[in-house]
Image 1 (tube, rainbow, N blue to C red):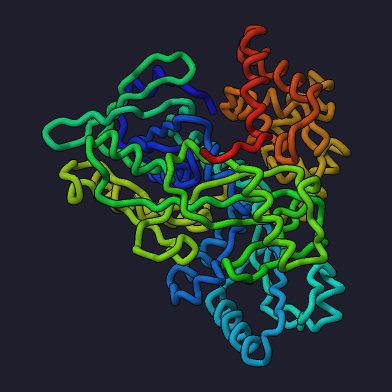
Image 2 (cartoon, rainbow, N blue to C red):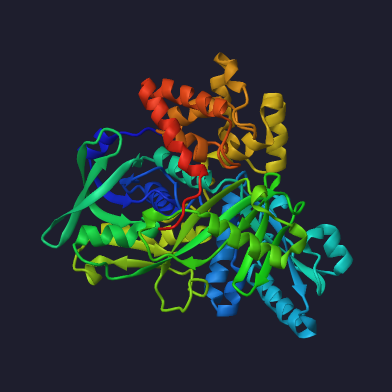
Length: 541
């Protein structure tokens, strides 16, 4: 995967996608697989915002049943199975415990009915060739069995817990990246750090966009027949600037923070209901990920941050429902925030707002033909949203007869049948170098990574202390379009997802990346300094 702005500026495309999060990545992949000539630009790094800063779940949305959004739940459950099939190295089953406290017979009956409906809607959860990916129906665990599974649930009034299943992403940013890698392999032209600053229009029709290169500070023009805006929480901001007036469809942004703490459970996640809605305690790489908050964020999306007050308030919330957790600020190892882009449906709170998606044809809404926006939605349903978007585009281009293949074609790292057998085979082939972490991060692309180490065995040395190795920094520069130290530390590897890595590891990564990209000493020092805010809280203005 190579960044080539000369190609972007010298060719004419059928489709330009603005935004390199998971929605844009899925649109680009689907379009490329259908033979549509597609380009994608992202103003920062791929999957660098909402697509990375989430709860790492591929789930049906159990709580949406209370809002009678049966269609959204069924779509999510179908898409959950698809992600499990096309990316089994990055998506795996996750058991959930839903504890009940002083709910009584009626409360338990209501929850049992909801979970039964959830099971019925996920009737295809066992339609997977790999038996390890199949999900069980829900069941009830009494007090002793539930506490044996997760003692942290103990609290006054505890009655037991329902056990149900959903799925978890090992690394959402890498899952989105693999969609882009697949798009690239099928002819898409991609560029990160390439910001669309202006739409090119003539006679009421979009003809392309002006792109500012964030690396060279130069500008190019991309010519295209159709533009799709898939910029997540920034979509309406971009459109207002590009159109010269507010966009016809309004987004509501919801802020969600996550905290990484030492493990509170063994293998099961917890779904905890409270007066603010619910939160999760999610097992992830030997830790617990606490998520998430859900509060309106009316400010500029670029102003998003996590404050000490955010952390303290969330810790109090968790401790009030799980007193056995005994969480303090000192136990928080890492934190991050993301913004959910919600289509404004008039809901009184962001928690109650629908997670539905919407496709806007600006030919009807704003009198600009050839311009579309993909708004709202959720990670789980991003592939399905992209399919609908590309169906519309294919119709506009006169190519409606080419079917979508993204639901059946495995991603580049998933060229194997069964995960457990694949892991065993990788350990036989690569011995101890093939750690569980690397197998999940790269899947069948792991062979390409280890090819670097045959001539440079020193690249097998650990980097960051959580399973990453030096070869990943070189591979990220050569094969995964990493252009900054943040790209490597926060998204191409897992180095930065447990808090700030040791300075020596950051310097090693900077040296390896800098050598690949031709950095000066001043640039290397700047990259190290620029990374610091990723691990710092910032008080709200």
